[in-house]
Image (cartoon, rainbow over all chains, first blue to last red; front, side):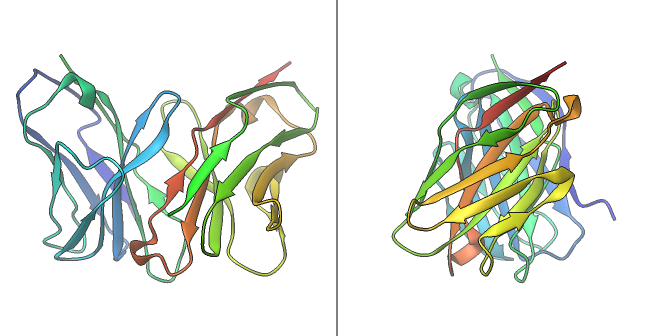
Length: 112
Length: 115
């Protein structure tokens, strides 16, 4: 049981480049979320999903897109990377009956 | 909407001493409350959660927290800390029946346990 798997673990992008952060879970969880973590600001919710085909915006959605075509996968897309998107990104999932989220190990992204 | 305030950004403490990490929340509806721990260069791990019932909640690694509705607080405590408890701790809140279980986090408290 792998839990929540995030790839890549590290990434360096140039300003203006695009990329997709991958997130996959093998627990058949309905709910999935993306957070970014910045020093002194805790974790801020970017986008979340309540099931395949359903997504919604969180606290800081600008500059990010998501889709949920399957229950297992919830990729996060940066269309045109900016230095302000330098952060650590966490994906998390939970089932409908459990209220504790399971987190992935994170992706450390640097935009130069 | 919900919000969380962790009152201390850093808490230094000596090994075997007691510790309390403070968390206040704001919400117009009833809430679920959580504490997560993050060890260096790792993801977040659930320590404990309050959903309903007894206001004193026990979690892993000897931690416990008390839900106080009148003071809108959910402080985390441990009677005797170890070096291995050095980590960042996050308080989080989710509104009851909140679609998608949106989890809102506080800013985090760095616990530093010194020998």
